[in-house]
Picture 1: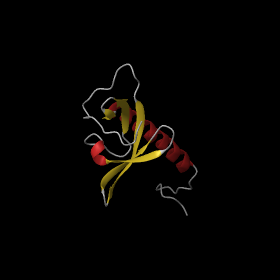
Picture 2: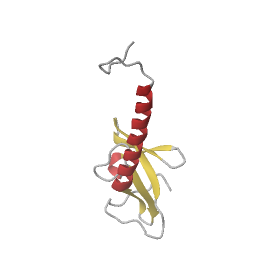
Picture 3: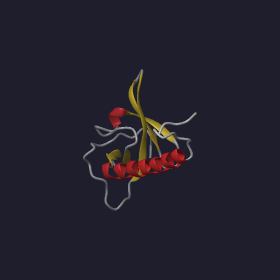
Picture 4: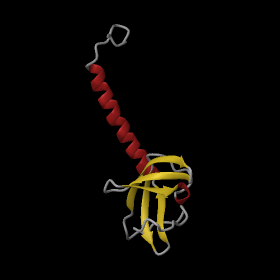
Length: 114
């Protein structure tokens, strides 16, 4: 997909025959040229796009469906997939934290003994 392509409105539906590529919003930041979004592509590369190219309400960690069409690149928020990915990440974090706590020397009050 050409990086310079424009986007169509967020409400525009993706073509049902063509599976959309997924990009992850890695982060949002203010720059001297205005707000931008770092987007992680499926191959691990990161690109930077103006925040105005993304759908309203986008946040770090959101998944975007990306389709290339005759009017340019179309970006759509995927709230259900984003929520599922966040739940899975939280479950993994909770599991790792529980395993780490089991290895910590705790006193009767649950505080770490140093």
